[in-house]
Length: 141
Image 1: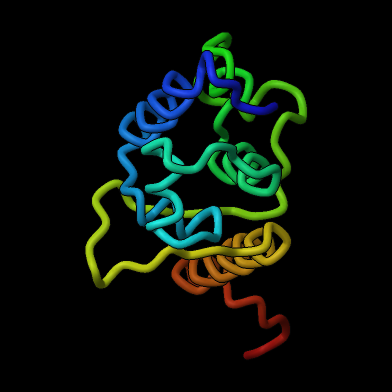
Image 2: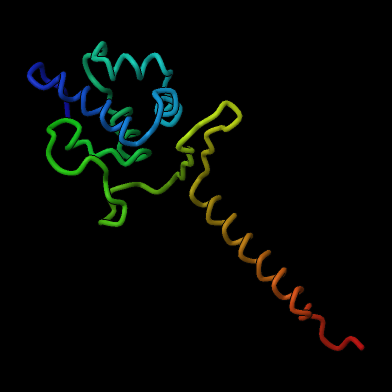
């Protein structure tokens, strides 16, 4: 979808509305979609006349922004990940609501995230088993 002259201001206003609704800074969004903060600011302020396809894709897949809403104002602002396969889950992003300088954006491949979850589950099971006195060693006297 491209921005035309009639709705340019509305698109940028909706982009700003999305950012504020999501409680993210321009810097955080820029980090997530892989551009400089100044470039994101130029987009949000209307200095950039179009939003490139890669940036549109990143806004949609990494931040769940509904591009139909962004460009037309129709539909929901946020894509509901529980409906269909609207979002590609190849990356998991964590961004704290109140970001401080000592917190960093963490990006994990989804497969790595799943491995971490499985490892934690196994560790919890081991701790539980050891705490209950069942250490799994059979035949010891």
